[in-house]
Length: 332
Ligand code: UDP
Ligand code: MN
Image (tube, rainbow, N blue to C red):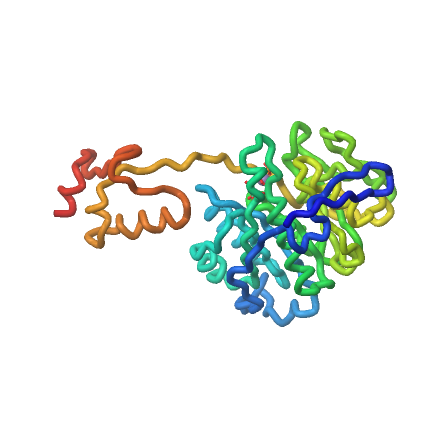
């Protein structure tokens, strides 16, 4: 059952958050998880040398689409270089995707795969709260496991991360902040720092936000966050960061500027062009083990890239010597 809770952030700007306690609202299922770090060497050092670092909980919302597997693959190969990390991959889907389980297992990074479907009521609205149910599910997972040490970072599946980001945020005491490249028209969003202190924010969209920062532009210490059991993120597009940071009672003096006083860009809001999924017209009788095509189209379907169809979509053309020939020519 969904509960509506009125919360106030002390400035009169009350708002409704859906089930602010977040225990019942997000119907999230843990799929596969692993707490074993299978990497022997990380950044050319034996893994044991990193053992004393605090853990970074890297929360990645993701959703089924053509680009999902390539995005997660690229991100995984970044995270493979990061010691002491637990990757929480929260999928906006109502079932555990076995293909993702296998993919994530293969990297050897400690991870948790969660299902975290967006509530139905947002599916067809124009401006969707993208990645919110996912991040709420991850926060719920941290709370349920009573994880109150380490650092929380919200890292979307399509951004670009410099490895220096991870060493910068790892010692976050309350909330650290840093610029994010490629945001809106300025190509940047981030804190303005004077004498080592954050005094304001450079971001082209203020819209009343006290904390006009991007999701990728801050990290939170989990001991600090656990002091705020009502910490939450609203299903309110554009205001996710602001209300989340309000819900943990952030104040300017608690912000730790990172990246050489916010002069370096260690994370980029890269956006991948989306392509709609279309069927490929190819006779099912040819998708057997006479060639690679059967296994290939099976994998494409599991990855959510393309589906073979007997009668729909663009015809599969197979050619040799510059001439296309019917599939039967090759396979009979
Ligand atoms: N996302 C999601 N469900 C959706 C759309 C997006 O879980 O329906 C995830 C997506 O994988 C990404 C994050 O939410 O990690 C932000 O979405 P997107 O990158 O599309 O938003 P933008 O960066 O353009 O604001
Ligand atoms: Mn994005």
